[in-house]
Length: 244
Ligand code: IPE
Ligand code: IPE
Ligand code: MG
View 1 (spheres, helix red, strand yellow):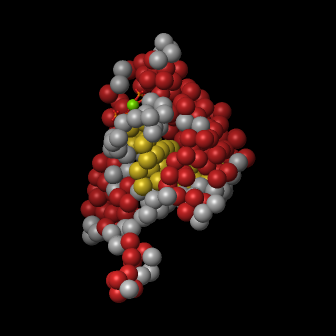
View 2 (tube, rainbow, N blue to C red; view 1 turned 180 degrees about the vertical axis):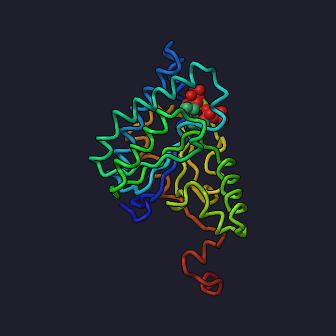
C-alpha cells in the first residue's frame, strides 16, 4: 500500500442526501427512507471509528428543511427523538462523543432535553467526535457567530469568527462527502469547507455502506492538498532543483 492510499482523513463531513428517492423508488413513504438513513448512519459511525477517523460531522436537518411538508418534518423530529433514546447507549459504549450543532430554539422541549442528555451521557468519550448538524445552516452559523462578537464588542476577524462558530470545538473538515448525486453544499459548512476535498457519489444515503466509505477515503488519499501553494513547494523542491 502506498503512503497516500493509507491516508485517512481526520475529519469527515457528510451531506446525507437521497433518503426520499430511496423510499420513492420502492413505493414507500419518504419517512421510510429516513428510517433507513438512520441505519446507514449507525453503520457509518462505527466504520469511521474503525478506520481511524477522529471527527465525523453529518448534515441531518437543514434550516431550509422546515419548508418540507408538515408530515415529513414531524416524522424527522420523531425519528430524531427515537434515535436518541435507542442509539445513545451504544455510542457511549463505542467511545463516541456526540454534539448537536444548530439552532435549538425552534425545537420542542422534548427534543431539546434529549439532545442535552445525549451530549452529557457521552461527554467523557474521546475516540470519535460525532457532530450532528440539526436545524443547521452555514449562513445561520456565520450570522450567529458575528452577532455574538458584536454583542460582546469584540473585533470581527477570521480568527475570532472561527472561534465563535458552532463547530469551534473541531478543526475544519478534510473530506466532505455528498451522497445522492447532487453537487452542491446546500448551506452546509460554508465557512469550514474552504479547503475540504469534495467527494460526490450517486449512491443514495441508505445505500452508503462500508465499501462506499472506503472508496471515498481511498479517493481522498489520492488528492494533493495544496492550500494555495505550488506542487514544488509541497515536495520541498526549489524552482532551480526542478529545472536541473
Ligand atoms: C436527505 O434526504 C435527508 C434530509 C434532508 C433530512 P432527502 O430527504 O433530501 O432525500 P431526497 O434528496 O429527496 O432523495
Ligand atoms: C441537504 O439536503 C440537507 C440534508 C442532507 C440534511 P437537501 O435535500 O435538503 O438539499 P437540496 O434541497 O437538494 O439542496
Ligand atoms: Mg435531498
